[in-house]
Image (cartoon, rainbow, N blue to C red):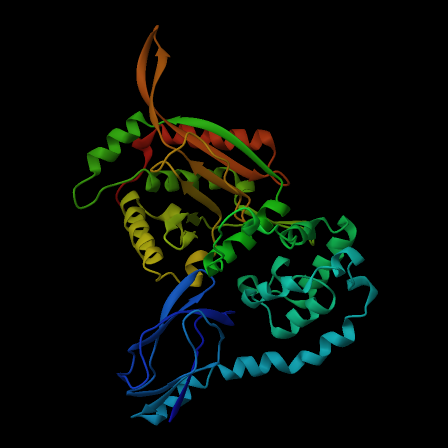
Length: 426
């Protein structure tokens, strides 16, 4: 008998939600055949069988929260030697549990203990810690000193939270009067009983929506937002886009915007940085990768197009199509969603003249695009029709001043209005 356990599916991923089971007890399976679909953070992926065999027992069900290394199924396998591959996830789990006693000795330190206001955070906040990139000992340490680890910015690889990160966050709460925790406290405020006024239906929040809610709440609470608005004349760009579009390759305006944004980041380096408020340092990035918000039936995903400045319009177009398809078919992996320098969110295909996008931390700016339209422009003593595209630039006012935001948006608009300077082919 082969005990099939949930395997490792990515760095720092310790749990996930079973979306669906692809087999039932008694089914025969082949090696690499899908057994279940697992959703972790913002990515869903199939989990294959490690060997040929017959399903004897299923220990999980759809909707369950499972941990890496947890027993999922018992398989009467044809090749028992494959069992070694399923036991690998136990190793990191065991390692993470061994230093569990250390945090208890350090918890009483005065400098790491937050104000009573932070300590009073209700235990209900703790379940959100399941999806945080932090070892069990770090989560335990945070819980002991009254910190919601899901609110702690991680400085380790791939955003992993360390004990020093928890201490720094607790110290920041002390000095700021607990302001950063106010959002978490408000989220725990009890709702009224809506059933008094009519029929209701209560459903659990999907995993992707939970992650989005936590992340955007953190962004909104911790980044002082400013949004500036402008309009770009894309009359000539529309002509160029239509000229190079074919039935097989229908160009959109997005790859043109990404190309301009990458060039703008080179010109305005303060937009291509992140802020470390623990050390009061600015981290300038020398790469130019841009996240693109994608609307899916599960919620919003923001995959990243890497090294935009090195790619042609056609190459970016193809990568955008591939990226959107992966997002909508749940093939996106965690690394696809990380490493962006700025984000583009385009609602022009739906509706609206303007909106105020929220900066996607740890980035410091985001460009929103609304629906374009024809407008009369007065030139040479007469009105002529020009196609205008509304843009909304939100930025972090801690590092970007209003004048810098205005210059950036003006530069982007002027660059869009000169499409003949863009490289369409590699």
